[in-house]
Image 1: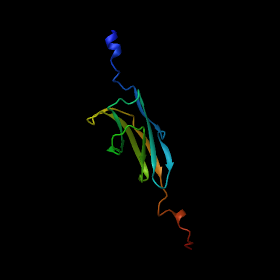
Image 2: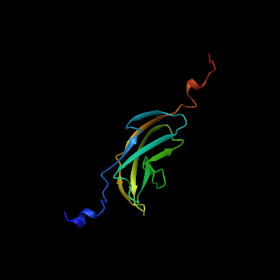
Image 3: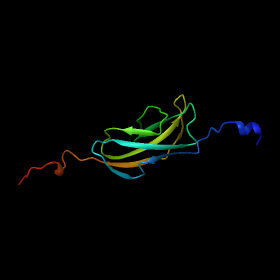
Image 4: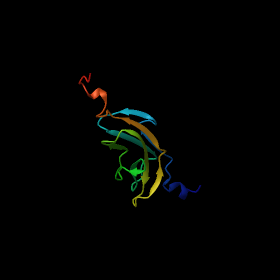
Amino acid sequence: ASQHDQQKPDLTYTEIAITSPAPDTVLRENSGNVTIQATVEPRLQKDHMLILTGNGARLSAPQKGYTFAITNLERGTHTFSVSVVDASGKSLISSPPVSIHLQRTSVLSPARHNKNTK
């Protein structure tokens, strides 16, 4: 390669992934609060940001940070993915999907009722 080619910035991301929680993690979190941690290699470029999608819907505004906080997530199985987007919002690369299983104590759970029904 010529010196000119070597001076051009590398515009290709080699890796994007959700690092936490691990795939198929079972979370017991009654508040429904979940933190998603992502990694991107190389680091995000100046005009690029990350977005989080869950179950096919965008869950976050574009951000520079690699941590996403989700509040009041419903119990059940959820699939998340993180994408790098450019300044126009176009997706450049997306992580493989990661599914988690959230368990929340039900209001109807017998463990929540202390009354003797006999």
